[in-house]
Amino acid sequence: MKQTRVHMGMPITVEIVSDLATSELFERVFAFFAEVDTNYSPFKPDSQVARIDSGELALDAADDEMQSILWLAELTEQQTFGFFTVWQNGRFNPSGIVKGWAIYQAADIVREAGFNNFYIDAGGDVQIYGRNPQAEPWQIGIRNPFDQTQIVKTLSAIDCGVATSGFYQRGRHIYNPHAADDPLDEVVSLTVVGPNVFEADRFATAAFAMGREGIHFIESRPGLEGYMIDKTGMATMSSGFSQYCSCAHALQQTS
Image (cartoon, rainbow, N blue to C red):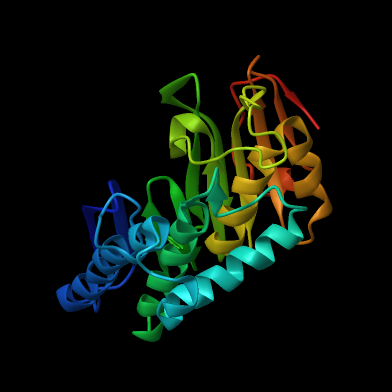
């Protein structure tokens, strides 16, 4: 059973490989994404994010869920040598961590309902568990950042998360905290595969902010693999990324 709806300003697709999946379960998953949008969108004036940003709501007065996200953001900032931050020029925007966190939490709703073969794709970031309807690993395409009608790499995987950072994909909430005027134009796309989409998403955001060095950072992190495309179309992958590759690629590649 498969459904797609728009929440958080992006299409979200949920596919569960079981005839026992109910409409009620899909409603619960999509209702969760709607709640995340209400609470964490920087564009909704009544959201916690907007209220924190405006100074109306103090950080220590935010709810427990927001406190958890803030703690995770601080941890990520430490783990990425300050290349990840939820503050940009004094403005509060946790978008770089909320999306992956939300997908991962939504996946827990499905797993707790007893399903182990499914995927959730939110705007191109994906959490997958188990196998597809053909009992094969799930197939995940990496789009060509220069022509999004093309797929440059197809991944074959089970039980992992995949996230892609790039201005064509995610908007311009990514920046280099160590050099605010850095245009971040050397890299156009960075895809990270991790144990779950939360890990993949937060580290993809930070690694993209590092520019060309980002792929080396991904290489250094246990459990992560990456695929970077630079502005010339050159692709560079981490040493273990090829384990996920199921077909030939379109761009020139180095490793």
